[in-house]
Image 1 (cartoon, rainbow, N blue to C red):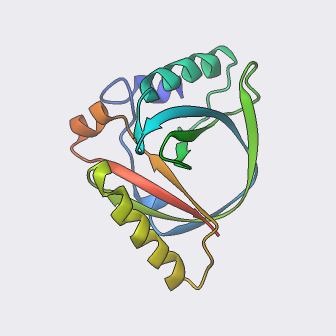
Image 2 (image 1 turned 180 degrees about the horizontal axis):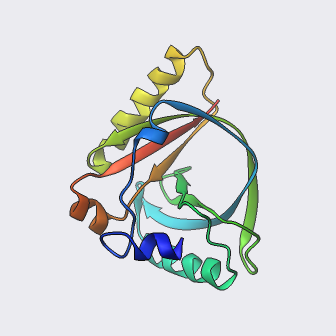
Image 3 (image 1 turned 45 degrees about the horizontal axis):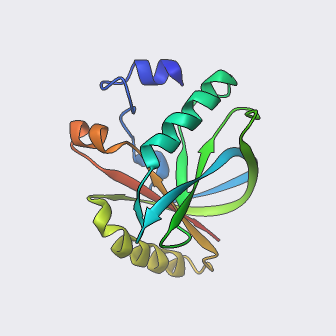
Length: 161
C-alpha cells in the first residue's frame, strides 16, 4: 500500500475506480479490520484526521498495510462514528475485529451533505434486489483534498444484507 500511495498522483489517496464497487454483491469471511472511534457533532466528524494519522502509523509500524485501501464508517449516532480500516494482519495496541457477511454495494458521487439522500437511495436499491437491510456502512474513498484534486468525490455505501 505504501507503493500504492507513493505512485498516486497526489502522494496521498490513489485515484478511485468505481467500477469494481458499483452495484456489486460481496461476501467476507473473517475479514480483518482495525476499529476505532471518531467524535462527531450531528454526524460531522471532529477528530477524523487525527484518528486516521494515529492508526495509519500503527498499521505501518505493524507492517499490516493491505494491498488495497479500504476504510469505512458506521455512523451509529449523532455523537460518534466507528471507523473500520482493513489490515493485512493484527495490529498491536489496536482494537481488532473480524467481519463476516454479505453486502450490496453502490457508488455515489458528490458532496458529503448528500449522504442522507444516498442512504435512502441505497435502501431502495436493497429492496429492489429483494433483500433485507441489516446495516449500512459508508466507504469514503479519498480524503477531501484528494477528492478536490481528482474532481470526483466518491462514496460507496455497503449495505449488509
